[in-house]
Image 1 (cartoon, rainbow, N blue to C red):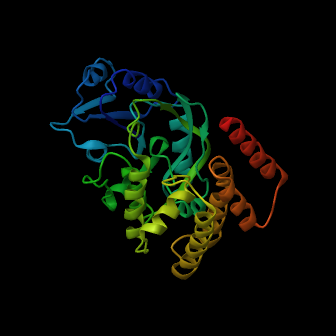
Image 2 (cartoon, one colour):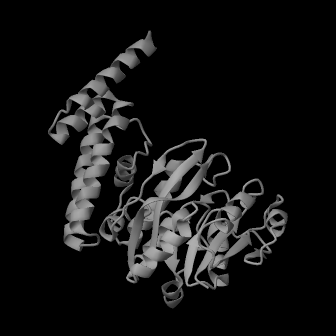
Image 3 (cartoon, helix red, strand yellow):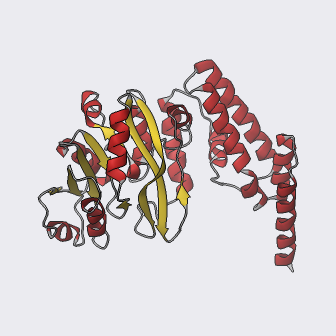
Length: 332
């Protein structure tokens, strides 16, 4: 068997049949779908069992283990050469398995790959991920290199190195910590197109959670994994680089952020944890992308960003002017 599609399920009764059908109706047919129900309290199990296709297997957990525990059971049960993840409320594009299997067959050095996410539901946009291995590695300090819901992995290497999710981790971010371990055993890569239709809405596991706290906890764990120091002040700056605002930004914080990014460059040149050119490019992109978010919140912070960037593009100056006019109109 070429592919095991792994689908942890928890209270996804309204969506899970559509998710499974997106695989069953795809162009690639040599697969099994392993659905591990994480002690759902709705009709998820009944919906899955109603699908009359022998390739769909259902495993019911005796207790709720959370995303990491359910994902580990999926890994334990899989029999295919490749492991494909699909969340129970998302959809696989029709040629997803065909394209991903062909990519992995052609790149035996790659242990895990993925593609972009096309959002639908509450929001409609394309979430892009790095394409090359070096750029994927350069993103590890800031987020996932591969979208879990669009991923495919080589089962032989997963089993050889006994790669599993941390069952003690809370409900959000287990994939980021998992990819850290995967990065030690092979290369990453992503197809430059959407592999999964990602449903945005209240059913998402992250909905209603404190994003800044979740990312703070994860960032501390990631820095510890690489044995990098991280003070509370540096943590705030690192989150700011990722557009997570724990406080209203000001000019001093933007100056401190610039110094923090420079320190990360220095540390990486010394430790060589990530490809130097790609890591530098990633930090530059994070810095450049931050301007509009600063301009939406603080004129002083945005002006500091322009000054520290050493350039004053007219489109950015004009955007900042528009935000100031809007602020004046709101006050009146």
